[in-house]
Image (cartoon, rainbow, N blue to C red; front, side, top):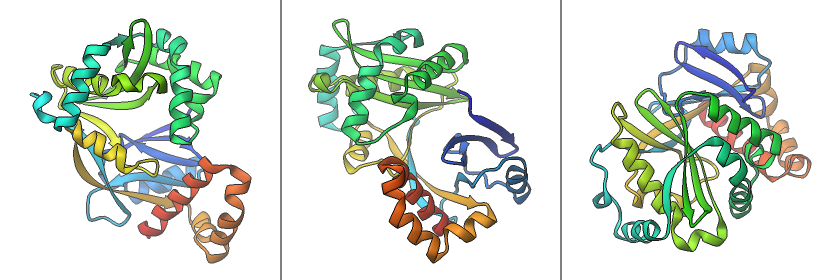
Length: 281
């Protein structure tokens, strides 16, 4: 994908967001050592590091969504979700796709989903970034994409990546005009069930709660049988950045100018990062 990547003893760090390195996988909670942190700051001109820690650590309490039951079935779902899955499976064909197929069929679903959520994601909205993502999916072992089709039209898709025994769901997007046919529940259920029946797979991870999460999304995942595992997210700022951004003057500047200059998505991201940085002190 063209990102800066660095591996340390306690994870892989990827420079994907506004001058910060994020550690992956997002459920890795082993604390990085001070030596790792100093090495990353020394080697890269980054503003800070974002990573997960065990519950009870200093930072922002959160959680991740997991299915770990190898017998995952309709009985694990809330009754309303079971109804939605059955309707979706009646209306849709759920099957694996190729990333080349996704490259051609995915953009309308990306636009619809970003519009519904009121946000932007360059990987999904910029043609060159989208092309690079789909090319990477074709090349990298462990990447898959599944789709829910209504006749020949793609109604929903999900991309996923397997890391050791955990399948990570990455992007899930859908066509607004076809959501009434329940493609998302059918897709989520089929993919989760298939993954949990795959030899060597121990869990399916549907991401952490983040600043884009909503009560509706939380209820949807829980009703689909995903359980919430507690985690704490921490931000370690470069010392000079910490002094500037977390000072009273720095916060006033960001509050006054950030949204007007950088747009809604970036402003929300910066505010979320600073909030976690304060809690991590």
